[in-house]
Amino acid sequence: MYEVKENSRILKDGTEITTYSRDVISCNILEVEAGTTGYCGSDTGHGGRTYFRIQDAACTDMEIHSYTTHCGSNGFEVCLGGDCELETMIRALKFITKVLEDESKEVYD
Image (cartoon, rainbow, N blue to C red; front, side):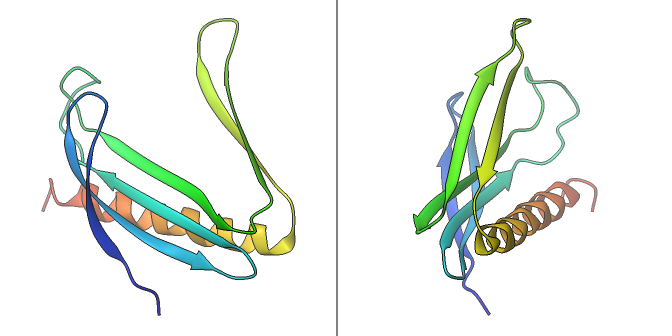
C-alpha cells in the first residue's frame, strides 16, 4: 500500500484548499497531488476551485508543454517515454480522479 498525505494549498486567488498527495513508484517515481473545494454552484467568480500536480521525483522521461492558441485558449500537453512512465501516469491520473470525485461528493452528502 502507499501513504497518502493530507496537505493545504493556497491558490493564486487566495483560496485555501485541502489536497492529498502520494508517490507513484516503479522504475520511475511521480509525485502526485490533487484537491478541490467541490462544486460551489457558479463559474470562476464564485464557483469551486480544483488543483492537481504531477511532478517527476526520479527518472521519469516526461515533457510538458503549455500553450496558448491563436484564439487565446490555454492548454498543456504531456509526452512520456517508456513503459514505466505509462504505468505510473495511469496510476497518478487514477489517484487524481479518485481525490476529485471523493472531495466533490461531500457537498451533496
